[in-house]
Amino acid sequence: MKLASAKHNRWQDHYARRAKKERFPARSVYKLKEMQQKYNLIKKGYKVLDLGCAPGSWLLYAADLTGNKGEVVGIDLEPVSERLPSHVRVYRSDVLFMDDELFKLTGKDFNVVLSDMAPATTGSRYVDSARSFNLCRAALSIAQNTLVSGGSFVCKIFHGEDFKKFSDAVKQGFNRHKIFKPQSSRKASKEIYIIGFGKK
Image (tube, rainbow, N blue to C red; front, side, top):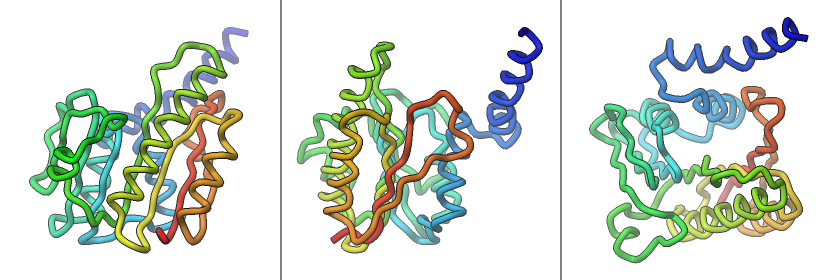
């Protein structure tokens, strides 16, 4: 039993080791990389908004994709200690309480809005999925307020009873949508990503 567990842990740590080697603060970067390789969401010169951006892996990867003619803006309750390129800005704030002042600071007309936000988990599947749904609704609302027409939206959600409701909301606001489970997600994780293409 111990041998199987060790093998399992080696596999789970593969992405963490790779992230360290490639100088990303978290393994989550590979989830966005998989989506980028499949759907080519972020292009040179794009404006990208990253909700729940700490510790900064998605910021760094998005900044590399946009190049310095692009712009990447992050929002998180937690500080980002990574050294960031000059075309990246980060604001400490709660996306559940976005106000006009913060919208003025972040700006609008984003080509892509990303949300890898997750709630503080309680161990209760129902509570966790409900909290995840609330974050997703906030992210979708921000995307609808800040995306250019035709822009894209990426949002992580915990699979639960509100999943279809949220998926339908994305479907309604975008020309098409996809449901994506990255290979780099932990196998036991309930997380899944909904991607909206072509904001109406």
